Length: 342
Image (cartoon, rainbow, N blue to C red; front, side, top):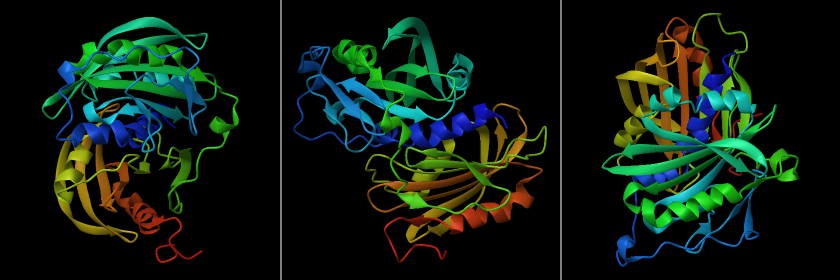
């Protein structure tokens, strides 16, 4: 099993599909909000003013003007799209680090500008400073990875480049002040998924948490791209608007593939939700082998749900029934009308 691919898929459903990404693509700024340039930079908070981020074992400082989010794991300032998000990665630090090398991030259209040694919670780590352009906006991002031999957490601070001077000190203080109780109960007991799916041979669940799962085949053909099916939900409220357009944009954001060419697309339900399905060909970023992609994206009007499968082109036909079985078993929890039979 190529763990780097699993990390990328995990990051895709837990971060790219989460609050910061969603807000960046569809910013909603109150009409009467004061102009950001007229505001003064918030002062760093006291060192002991830490807020626990549920399900991660991480506690963060909350600067004035920021709030603990109820939509994603972290803190945010929604009016100007600035935030610090925490993503729990159930993989060793050494593996997670590979997914955040300059080359790996460049393949996700994130340009690393500098790396600086940093000590967080008594741990030697690295502060990664980067820039990402999404639509017409450029965002400054800072990444910090903490971890051990079994698992890790990613801290991602984000602000529009035009507001960097305003929020730089506060966001960096949040990162430097973070505390990670790696043995704490919060990290050991993640929240239950808001949906359910069934495994379908040969696809087995290999990662679960942060309201997302990854399925793969532990016995994948050697030399082929390991099959991966990512199932997840956006952690922020997102008005997808035009569903076909949003689904295609979401497909283009997939971090482990490039040269995506849509073959077929059309309406498709996902459980009880109206959705949209796309079938495409692409190239695997790591091996450069051709792959086939199946994606179903649906919305409940507040959040969107994603089922995405990536398969080696030589294995795609054989694995199509398994993908269909996983997708057909999707159901929202606490909904008897959509729960699959047991």
